Length: 307
Image (cartoon, rainbow, N blue to C red; front, side):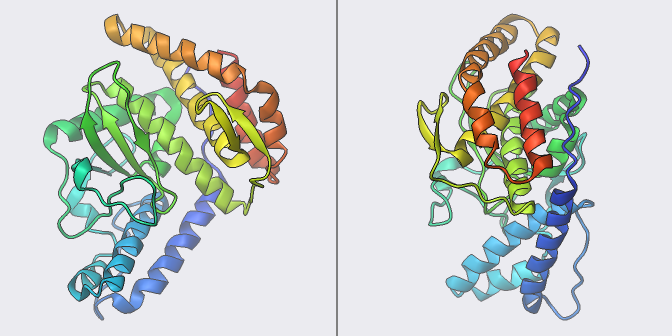
């Protein structure tokens, strides 16, 4: 089976990354030391963009709580110390962390726990960094290298679970390029979840880059949530889940045993869920005012329906 021919290169996103990073750095520049430069330590616009948002969140929280030393640290580390935390992967240096879920903060910026890079941040243990690197390699060889390179820069591995357990994962619009997820000792499964969450990050960036504001007055039934959702959430699900279906269909022949049965059951389940969205998806796409973005979403949905 040939690797999926999905293009995740989208010029408005690249321009959005550069512009947003430039704005954040300009806003925080007064906090930097007089002799400090703003290095391109990440090696890519996407990584710079992700790291800049961590610095922004950390500096803002420090300013609000009047923690001068912490605020100054962010000013002196515009890459959030990424060079000391990075793990080499098939899609470039990534930051792989293993924060304890019960110690992660909750605040008005998120309904879910989250983590912001800071002066005390340490990289995940070697076994988890190896797991993540293997997952990135799996995603890259199956056609998702650009997606993971651009939208999965920081990965927070949370609870260790067993194959068949419910794996929770999420992203935050305030921390683009960052993924929070449970994991098992199987890079094929972790790659699936990274692709899913990177898909959410990609779509958030694409909507922002094209200034596409989706009305929340129209709702559509989401089989994944088993409830009616605003078009924004419905379209997100109809993009992220199909990406995992396309990935699973490609890697399935290379698996065996319990993993093969797990992915087969997952793919069968997703086929049934996605089929119920066919009619509503076209109506929801009509709310996307950018033709190129609308076509990207349509093509991914159609490819998954054909599996």
